[in-house]
Image (cartoon, rainbow, N blue to C red; front, side, top):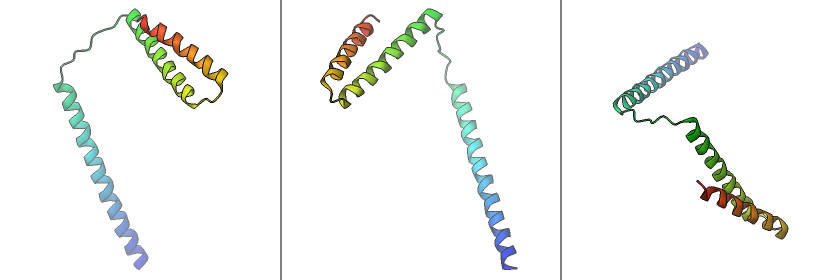
Length: 97
């Protein structure tokens, strides 16, 4: 009898918990939709050339970050020299944008 009562109590508590979680989540979604509808849509359309340029720049910036991290971690003088050369090359490429 105690086992059944415990099972019913736990089941009722879980049902309450899930219904509260679902209610909170739907309110959050409603809020996000309302926020999106209130904001003016000011997205400019990029040409394929602009998108390509942005992708290349982002790629160069990510490569530069990786090279800097590797440079900070290396202890080999030869590797350091190669990384410094790569970093200088990436800096030159980024200046062109």
